[in-house]
Length: 295
Ligand SMILES: [Zn+2]
Image 1: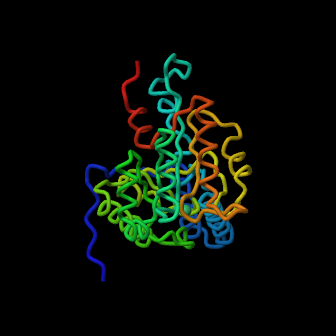
Image 2 (image 1 turned 135 degrees about the horizontal axis):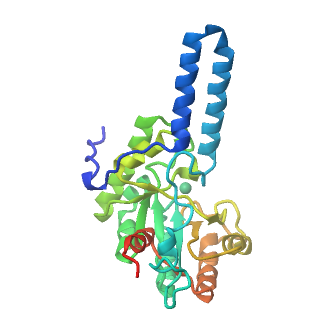
């Protein structure tokens, strides 16, 4: 038996507001039930409407960048992307992007990723797996101590994460919050679903924990593709301010020479960002920039 989890920090909780699509889905269910009560022979139509709605709900959950199920960052907030000012062309504004690194911490890779980020003066957000944080708390502490941020990527990174009900989702998320808090003293503010897959029960849990869902603008598919050129090409195609880029320090594919592909991609990516005058910032920094009063 694991000890009981601390309650979420009340200050971070936000109230859950169902998205228009969720409100519409509830209306479909209520309407179908009323139709069958009032006119029982209509049941095939009512059933068809409910089934069609469930297909759409499932499709929305399988589409990582969709906002149908609730708020979802696919880009940085506009003011953050343009350097804390609502006018993107403002002179001196440091245009920003976010590097997000998933599935760590990894004892073989994460330390070397931190060295590369240090060498380029870049900040990143690591979406860590709670179990791995508990196994490598020193690495989690190093991520924070070196100026980066840790986000919640669930406790076990289950393949069936998107099939869990409210209790299962809550346990996966709260246990990871706890593991990260215990290791670093910091409470994550951002969550990324394993493989980006979700269901309609997730957003109320995130609201309860004060977590913002983050997906990505572009991903390198660097857990399955070991070609640094191909991964870099995917990440930098149509690159622009406000992009959220996804790489992996855990579960990294290997290059032909056997190296974790992120270690070859990252220096080249950071050079491309520098040339494009795009500054990699953490998601928390992006949130702070977006909230700052604009001039
Ligand atoms: Zn992952």
